[in-house]
Image (cartoon, rainbow, N blue to C red):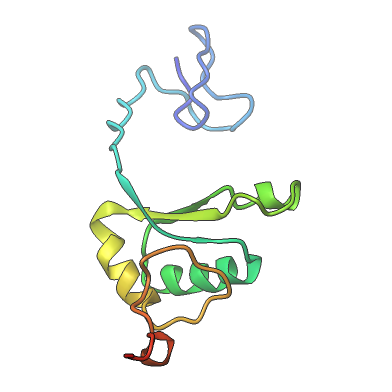
Length: 122
């Protein structure tokens, strides 16, 4: 006998899970097969404000992402940037969303240089 909630196994004769208080079942349903998700780096930053801002943009568009090293810089000086990784199939859309943003620190191909940043012809 098994608990369908916590997956604990019980001896014959017991009818309810002592932890979850739900009726036991004879067999657990099979676990769904895990899906491999490939991620692509979209940007790097040292600034926690950038991270919070980018999260709000991506969550608003239901883009699956994570920041690698997000909490590491709170323990050490910011020598390694935090990396934004987005599902590979959503990376181009994420780059479009971030295209017009003015973030504090960048080390990516996020946007083209502004006209005024380009060198004047000699």
